Length: 104
Length: 323
Image 1 (cartoon, each protein chain N blue to C red):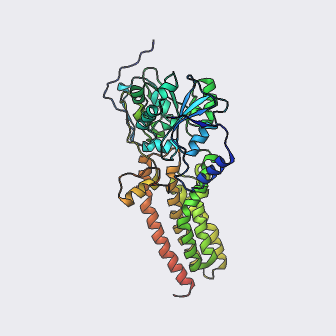
Image 2: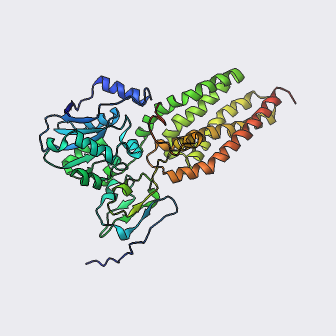
Image 3: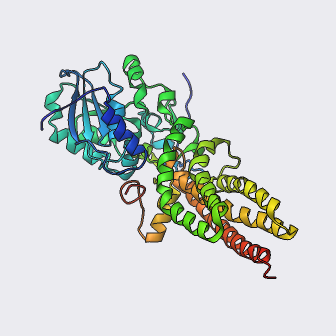
């Protein structure tokens, strides 16, 4: 039997590259995060999900929304310069894909 | 709500619609009515797939269900594809719950399992859908073409879970990128033609086609990590043939050298800006990363453009013999 160390519930794994934060102590190991991530940021683990490649995170927010335990936090949004520049120029908060951006 | 019928074959009018969508023609009007569709002759045990009401999304799903009896629940995403609509929230938890209820899906099938495209996950909280409707959300593969393998194996492999951005996908974006640039390119071409003739006009064409066509195609091969710097390097390379031809015809050495520098300083930020704007079309950029890139490169690009324009004005004045 493998010995898996206990992790404090309030322990937060952060990285300096993006806004993804993972609290392994809250993980219930349902496997949803590794199922929904399009870039393999999370991997299935023995007792809890493993943050395998945080640098590949594109902040789509799928893991946070599908985590029933609230163990993942990410400031989700679209990595689109055109949308951000358009939002800055028009003074709107956030422009997303659709008729107001790209579509006409 | 009545169940509509869909086929797995694509007609020539479907394909013409896809060409128009790829060209950006009537961008928001490539829609199918939302609701429940049947493929083949579904029974109460048949699988239920969920899609967006954008023709490219719906058609890529149904064309990969050949020989299957299935139901497709089409959400109202206002003609936006699955991934973008999930980011907006229109391919979302509330819309899915509402369509499950309004379609009477619970009476149409006796299982409680929905297959969603994996890229719908940024909009859908699977556990909330389960709690509200009793339906379990299963995220299928990223690409619809992997559905036959997924149904056969009963699981999604890591390859099917991972988003890539191959040449084919990048090339598909080129026509719409060019079409969307025309509203800036055409006036620029007219102005430059009036100011400096055909060669000047071709510089604008090279810069804009460089940023909208060459940039996406060459993306993984361009050096540096940032999109803006990738584009700036491409812009400098694209300026060289024009500078070379200018050197051949110019009479003075200093204007030849000044023209070369000025043109590079002007073309680099134009292609760099178009490259930066391509971030939203890719499958991997994050908002944090793009924001950093905007703050890092926009001041540099504006400065280059201003210095380049001043230097170009001085060069042209020199060639006219104004000094």
